Length: 519
Image (cartoon, rainbow, N blue to C red; front, top):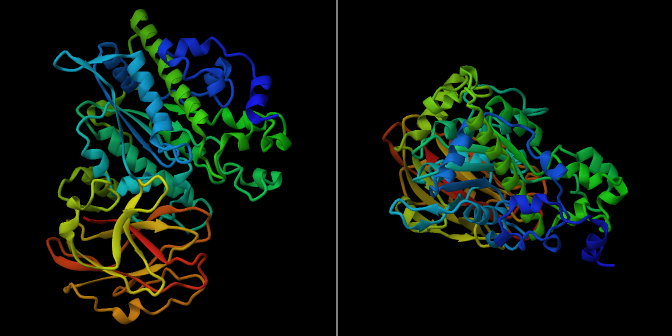
């Protein structure tokens, strides 16, 4: 019996919730045979773990009621991109905006029929959005934003932007780092006006965590790793502290995956099983899974709409303590950021004079070619299957590939580099500053770094950028250079790839530079 046959026989008939949630023209898309499994009202009721302060969300719904066309921004990683589901065309953002347009037709300012618009960025976690904030701040209008970073944020290594000691690099520091970058991004979004205060929702779409990520789906390892690599508990905590509504597809998915016992959690005969949900060993759902993610968003929006209408009919007065004070720019004191970090990274985030060289932007070299003063062996392209993850890449086993960028010091004199770390085929580069476009460290650039585990200790003159690690994942990371620039001082930043380290997995020797920020 095939998996699809089994799903037909083992799942109940579609519940009335489907007809309530979707307009008639979309109901065939969400028909039983198109879904991973049937979804009931009782399942969807569990998708609101944190209600939060919904005044901004109600403000967005009121725009829909007056037929105003809106812009929805999705901040997420590979799940949001539809990785292993066929790309954007099969991903939940596209399905959700289709539902939005069918459910709430809108009219342009000139009176002609319009469409709600979807926006996305090309970063993958809270840290890279922190670095390349202009991807968000340069969008002219934003009415609603969904944030989906639970799995990717686990791979944030430490807090290089911290201005104070956050404690030893063990234990809970990774969770602290996740919360630090998440809090910074939330505070920026709460202060942003595009042109109105933005409705913010944390969306938990990476709904199984890493419990499946073992070679043979061993149930002991599954139990031992459950939630360890999923930052949802931390995201729930910080969302609660900032009264951010949470829509979750994982709160109810986790119990369903193992409801019939651990033995069936990875058994294809169970239509709700973990292995049936994923196209690979990570958190990437198939297309039918994305339909269910979209269904969760639609259901939660409709439930909040009912609450808003109920408040209006009851003429309920909102108590002052319950008001969303961020409408007027008043926020609670930061939890994880020091006051100095708040001043630099939140208040200063709106400084248009911060130089941001972003190689991940798919619009191409017109945005940054003026900064590149020398290039020997580096190429700008997207190196993933979906052809959407761009960067400046060197790939040479002998090493020596060199690039030079002109950089000018900002108010704080800091230079940060973002690049990809991976478990296979990635190497080590060197970085330094001087006053010439030429490679003044050619000898070091063609000298193999022979350590099995490359130390992160670096001199002030030449610093190592380590792009390999043991974790089976490829994620962005960031490093702030020890070298600083005086405000207004211009120097040349050099980066060169060293030869392939025989202790690194894979035959390639890559380095993927994502961006440079000077502030």
